[in-house]
Amino acid sequence: MLEIVQGDNLSFLQGCAAGAFDLIYVDPPFNTGSERSHTPIRAVRDEQGGDRTGFGGRRYRTQGGQRRSYDDAFDDYLAFLEPRLVESRRVLASGGSLFVHLDSREVHYAKVMLDTIFGRASFMNEIIWAYDYGGRSKRRWPAKHDSILWYARDPERYTFNYDAIDRVPYMAPGLVGAEKAARGKTPTDVWWHTIVPTNSRERTGYPTQKPVGLLERIVRVHSNPGDRLLDFFAGSGSFGEAAERHGRYCTLVDVNPAAIEIMQERFTGASFRGADGAPVIRVKEQIHETA
Ligand SMILES: C[S@@+](CC[C@H](N)C(=O)[O-])C[C@H]1O[C@@H](n2cnc3c(N)ncnc32)[C@H](O)[C@@H]1O
Image 1 (tube, rainbow, N blue to C red):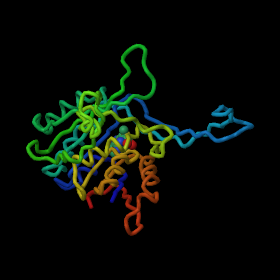
Image 2 (tube, rainbow, N blue to C red; image 1 turned 45 degrees about the vertical axis):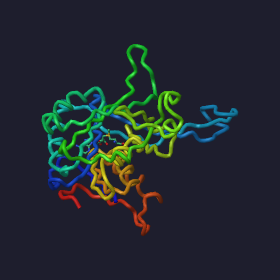
Image 3 (cartoon, rainbow, N blue to C red; image 1 turned 135 degrees about the horizontal axis):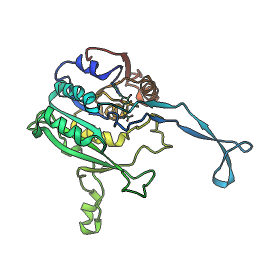
């Protein structure tokens, strides 16, 4: 079951009971200093007036979809993040974990702040999400990774389902036996995963959408079926989709009406119906208690 909440996440968090959630994943704005936007484009066959030539000389006309955006410029980014991360710790259950997804612009500052909020012993991993897509700078190394910081509420007792970890191919399968090579190995803290492909069915048209496959690993390993999950910078709701695929409850909060609209579209399809055929989502304006 997914619950979508429209409103500012700080007041949402302040209205939640202590220990309400077993797993929190957040992907806040990265403080890029500008608006993040995305306008999906679609190529429609048009032999007469097309502006592009495709396979076999066929002509296509480019059609623009609806532009979606959110602000990503902060005078004091850490002052924005801090009260939300303090609340995150309060609303985590005793065996729960927080995952904070950032890039190299702010991750080091956020790490120092999270060490202060959770205690350094609660820092478990910095996961590097490595991808390889898009432009390549000729003036410096192309930046093709994000960082995901993992903090456990209690570093002595937290959910880590080792058996639920998916396996990845060996880099040099010839150096291990055939059986091992076929089974693959468990990943390290560097996770290679493609971005959401531009023309894939997964693509919602929301800027900075994260791939569900990446988030499914977090859901499977760091929570159990029936657990209560939260993403309070939800965007297009990718974390909610990962949670729903694995039978977890998930609350998705976003302040941007465009994000709420995208999530409503995303989760009303046939694949998001319960056993009784009823939709798996309900949408709320800002609420002050968790259901
Ligand atoms: C990087 S995007 C999240 C993308 C998301 N992980 C996805 O896969 O689509 C950050 C989101 O945080 C939302 N946001 C920013 N400030 C917020 C606030 N104070 N309360 C709730 N949401 C906020 C923005 O509207 C934006 O949708």
